[in-house]
Amino acid sequence: VDARIARCSPLSAEVGDKVELTGEVVRCQYSARFGTWFVTVLTAENLAVWFGYREALDLDSSITFRGTVKRHTDSSTQLNRVKIVGDSK
Image (tube, rainbow, N blue to C red; front, side, top):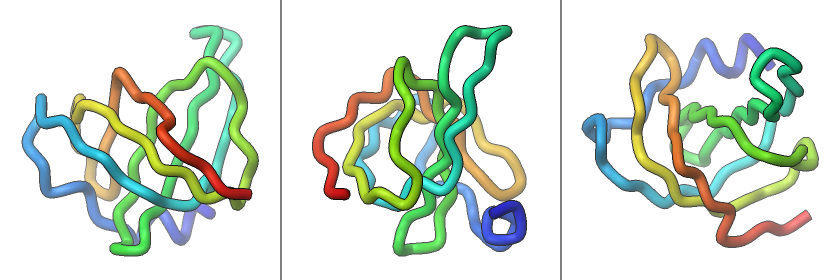
């Protein structure tokens, strides 16, 4: 999974922009420190996004979600205020 994420690009949206994306859940890890699940999603356009979410999401499931761009890193984009609008397992 780390190798796939390293080959991805961050989202081209500006910080503060609202986006809606569809992609595959490739990582979902619980953080006891923050009391939330950190979810990483890869899109068909080879974009990597990650966000905190209140519950675990199934790995390898396809989801559609909306969120606000919080920041960019070298190979991914962090979102906040994420809402899941559709999923297919």
